[in-house]
Image 1 (tube, one colour):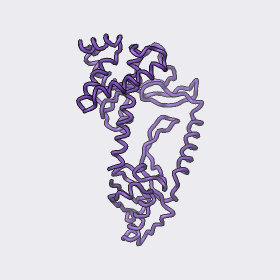
Image 2 (spheres, rainbow, N blue to C red; image 1 turned 180 degrees about the vertical axis):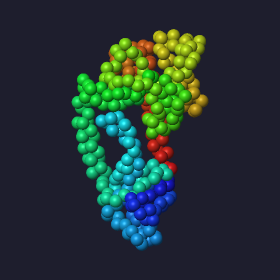
Image 3 (cartoon, one colour; image 1 turned 180 degrees about the horizontal axis):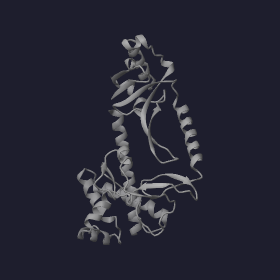
Image 4 (spheres, helix red, strand yellow; image 1 turned 90 degrees about the vertical axis):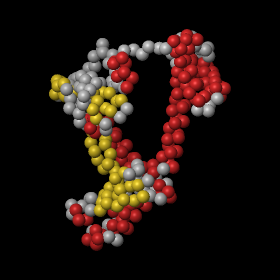
Length: 308
């Protein structure tokens, strides 16, 4: 794990310094205050410290983050303080730019209390305001008007793999959130807080929506149709059969898979009062299984982050 410690909180550029540190394993699981101490020691021992001596007690670490202003819905980039008692690997991403700023450090408890107070202040400021329902606008205004001028998109956003774009402007794509937020709008008018009651338009689209729009509804194979019919009309039965087959190839025996899924079906059956082989029970049990597999993958991902 590497971090870039930057001191730029001074108008005199000759006092600025960047220190690249490869963290030993023991530092990853230690407090962030150790990084600040190491930087100050290196800084004061160099040429910059001869004219601008730094004191650990009067400095804190910060990282750049993008936050949303609840009042106008706009994104803003700002420096957010890093807690002095925070664990490095849990609070600072790998290869992050970490800024040394003037002002004393604060603990995680103090930072959380300040953030909560700020959130409450923002909620109080917008509680009597309405939010424009046009895609991409996000402006807020007094309930009942006056209604401000509005620039927006006629279609919902699309999030497909790493690409982000508006469905009404498919030729203008972005690959990070800030660039997506700055994509030019295609419509202009007046803000409104009334959504069209007859519209069933989704609020955002994904890859499946794009493929369906291009190719039409997906046709089921004969095998999928037969599997669904055998399970009493369950839409998830074909997925279940494919999952069972794939996991068997990965070394998870069919007997073990069946035992786990039957147990989930029993729990679902008891909770909703239906028979275990009811199509609705099978479909719900498959959703439960999917959630458990996802949680298992998340656990593995966290372990990998702790190891690296």
